[in-house]
Length: 416
Image 1 (cartoon, rainbow, N blue to C red):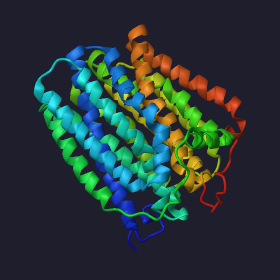
Image 2 (cartoon, rainbow, N blue to C red):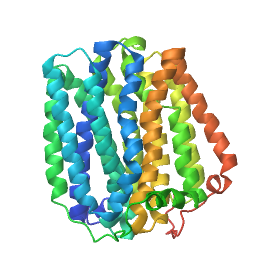
Image 3 (spheres, helix red, strand yellow):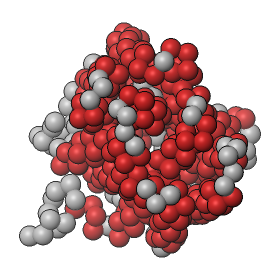
Image 4 (cartoon, rainbow, N blue to C red):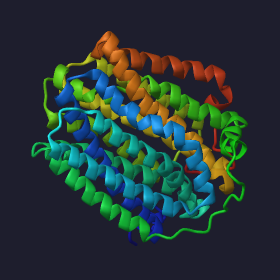
């Protein structure tokens, strides 16, 4: 019996559309991760400013925050697959513009921030569509495995992308942007070749009432609200990855290849964790697993701030990624299990706001804090704040911290 025909976590890959979707997502993420290494290193080489590293995150988050609720409404009214294709084409344009900036030889970095605003806009529309479309690609019984495998492919790309970007940067940022553009082109073609089951589309006209439907839904579900707000406030203070270009250069005294490995380590931890979850999904002690994952994220951030050794830093970032993966897995299943299809785009948009805030806004916060208190102090403060938030949320959301099983999920005797 082959691996794909067995009842293992890989059996869902027999679904052609899911395989195409995962392949497109893998290549697109690989391109974006390569590009992020090049952008961070290029900007820091030009300006030498920690604050500018924080601005890279802010330039992506600001348009994301403005557009995300509208993007969720669009994902509920239109074909989510086509939205993803258009967003990938926009990301391809971003790579081309970064290539043009590099070729110009400019030493003024504001055009890079302007291009990243376009990237953040595309990501705003892509996130709710890509989160919501997965339920239309696989049967409900396979959804848990599809989420875990989707996370696996995503984080494998997060592993390979920074390393590849760091290696290719030795030949100059031009090479990185060219390869990223080629990968995004293939990803777009793969996504355009998929089909999905008919979605239940919203027929409500756009208004503040309909745009805020997802927010009202989340607010009415304390478990969902607790899960996504925990991620927001915990990871918001732990955005140490934004500081890795400076950390590699100033603390470890290393170059772009080492930066690539550092950027890869969280993805490696997340990928191995998600592969384990595909075969051994969490079905019991859901709340304890989620809070434990966030606590591990905070402790790993503290370890990163304390060390000056490359190997220890890699290990800390690996554990950081593994802890984050557990939290992401639990949160994603909670949101998708609880949400009706006709508002799934808008609820996914709210979820994306929390994810985006914890990532890009967290990167901006880390850059500002590092400018105020210094690089290592900023990382240590972020890790400590993450642990404080974890403890506080166990008190504010006891129903989540004590949660045993996912809602409406039947135990099959193979619980983790």
